[in-house]
Length: 314
Image 1 (cartoon, helix red, strand yellow):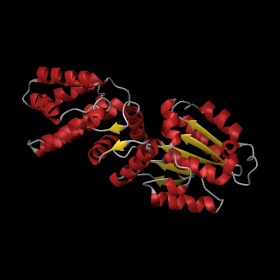
Image 2 (cartoon, one colour; image 1 turned 60 degrees about the horizontal axis):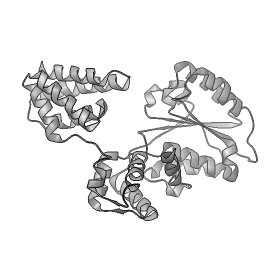
Image 3 (cartoon, one colour; image 1 turned 90 degrees about the horizontal axis):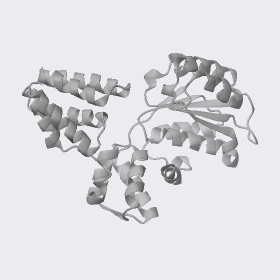
Image 4 (spheres, helix red, strand yellow; image 1 turned 45 degrees about the vertical axis):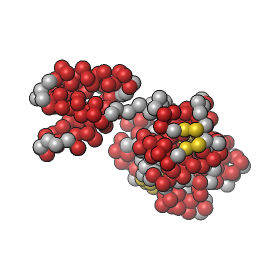
């Protein structure tokens, strides 16, 4: 809850405050000013401003009454057909309160909706288009069915660049009285990789301990694998020493508190820098992609990483 309050504190209130998505903001702002917005689909990685832009749209359309004319649902929590039939439909079928503009329904993480719920949503978007507009936010647009995509104006968000992240860090540091040097900004950018939400969580956690945030303060909050450790794991596997590779990998994960996804991304980076045949690199990268997909779908991290090491050893 504290993290959510801190995030809300630095959430932009106007279009001008949104960083890194200038082209999208320009197009959306023009639609809002015309008071005739379509259904919209925001797609892109986490923490780049999709939900924030949807809230700014509601605030700009409805001013002080925006909360009465705005419904936000996280589809990953309420992903079934009943959510569309009950919560969404009940809100959509009434006209806006104290406003001439249509109400806004934000379905965050819409790619988590079941196919049945998406089919029900398609019909709801058509039926109640006079009273409300839908904004769907997702990370994986391929999971949204085509009939919904065809009803929406699609906006593709991108990760924020280093200079944009740096501007956000300096703004927060000034307001919170934090001391952050250039080296620390580089570390923060390298870890959050354009994800502002993750950046804010790190800054909030570290600022509770010290107002001067440096590499030492960040060590406990940013757990990464040293390149040499990953390289050792891969080299053991390439030399067909599977048991040593497995032992080393498990030790690295347990000591650093890392997830399987953290490890697989580090493995992918290190493979590209190793002096092995291109054909082997291609095979390992392809296998990494397969393993990452299985992890995202809920497979056991340890078993999947052991399978990767077995593949490399063979």
